Image (tube, rainbow, N blue to C red; front, side, top):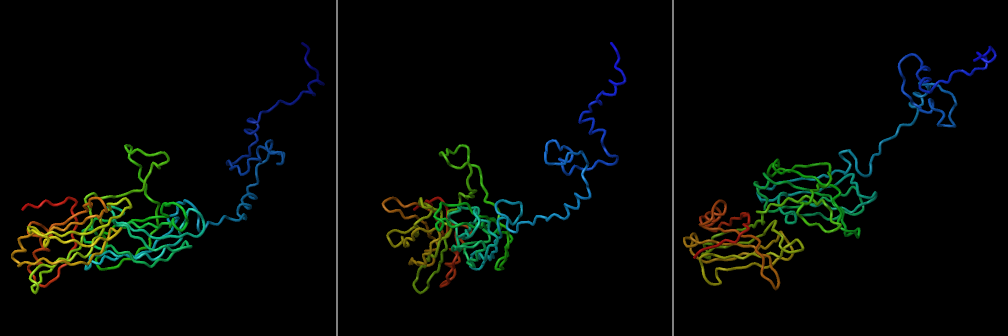
Length: 387
């Protein structure tokens, strides 16, 4: 084979160099700089870019970054956010009135509420005492319309609130959108918060300004058959099965009339017995052992409430020594038209009782013409009295 001559050698093409080899060779000495614009190194994929392989001018790029306008944070971001104030805040005041066995919650105002859709919103505050039947302890304020910063300045009062309740209960406050004014079904709360009540000092008001949190959801039990379209999650409900409510009774032995005056003042947090979530409560009184209608009394019926006020008084004649050996049975019932009434709860006062119930009975009979008022929790089982 003949070797190519000098003329053929002069026409020989230069060896082809791959892109990897080119990038490995054509590197400026010094530390590796970050790539600010990828098009500066691969102009083939950007036809409008400059057709030259060059390193970017770092000084020019840094100056351009410094001179570019910086984005400003949104003062009221919509939707979910990691900011603790994303759902807004609620200002309220709590007061444990130990002298009257009451808890007062004053809802002042909310700020920065985030409704599902931007714009105005119609809101109210709903309160619950937990643990317990949420419907029984539910209170709410009026609805304030057309604002994301509503001002209520309304006080919600829980009667029959004792130091034992303060030691173990938590107050849940929810800011809710009123569905009736929006012609829509019940919507989840815009936010909620929970305050343990054990740190409250009796007869001393305490103010709060707390960020709202998302509603807590729990997964439905696996054994629960869910219909098609039913959510797999439900709102957290804390129910104490032993709580049936409580009743405020007044006892007074009248020396002028020669008998016992029993006042049925009010009930609080009764267990709901009707399908609408309420009850139609009334109270029965029975002095045992006694026969005849004189030993039985009944209050009027209060419709659709779990916190009824009765303020009715009944009289049982008899000397003090005789009454001391008897038992007063107080029971709360739900009135049902055409069917049997439902038993809600009861309490037994007298010589067979114990604790606060026995003390209430003895102090009443030991001090004439002195009215003693005391809250008593209701028992869930009817009492069986022997003759």
